[in-house]
Length: 183
Image 1 (cartoon, rainbow, N blue to C red):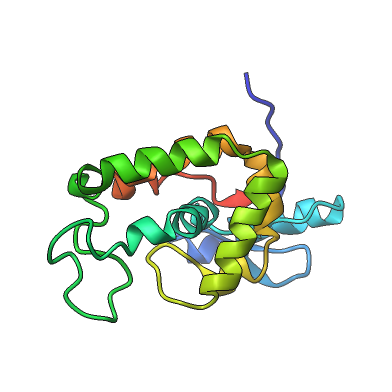
Image 2 (cartoon, rainbow, N blue to C red; image 1 turned 180 degrees about the vertical axis):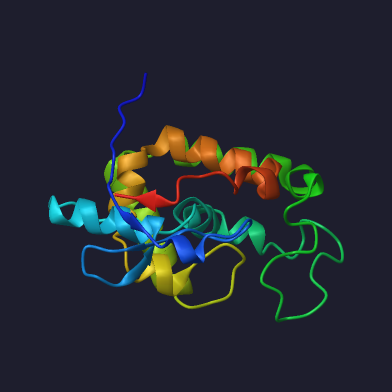
C-alpha cells in the first residue's frame, strides 16, 4: 500500500459540528485547519509546502492552454463580453469537442517537450499573461508563491499533458479531488 504518516494534533472539540471543518491547536498555539497543522509538521521537518486544493493543476492547465481557451474562433458566441474569464462552453463537454484538433495538437506539442522546454513554456505564459483573468489560474495563491516552471518539470511533460487532456474533457469533474497539500 501507499506509505502513511500520522500527524498528531490537539482538536478543538467545541468547534466540532456536522458539516463544519475541524480545527486544531497548531504547533504555534494558534487555531489551525487540518491542512495547516500538516504544513506545520512538515515544515518542522524542513519540507516546504502549500495548501492549494488542486489549484496547481488548474493553473498549469490555464497557463499551458491559454491561447486555446481564449481562441475567439473556436466556438461561435462563446465570448459574450470582454470580461469573461473563460468561454461559455468551458467546463462542459463542448469545450473539448469545439477545439478537439487544436487541443490534441497542443497536447502532442507539450508531450514532446523536454524539462527545459516545459519550464520555458510555463514561464513564458506567466510572463505574457501575469495577472490576467483566466478561470482556474490562481495568480496570488499559486503563481506568485510556487515555482511553477519547476513544478511542471516535476510532473513531466507526458503526465502534465494527460492532466490537461482530462481537464479539457471535463473540467468540473477532474478539477476536484486533487490533493489539498502540495510539497
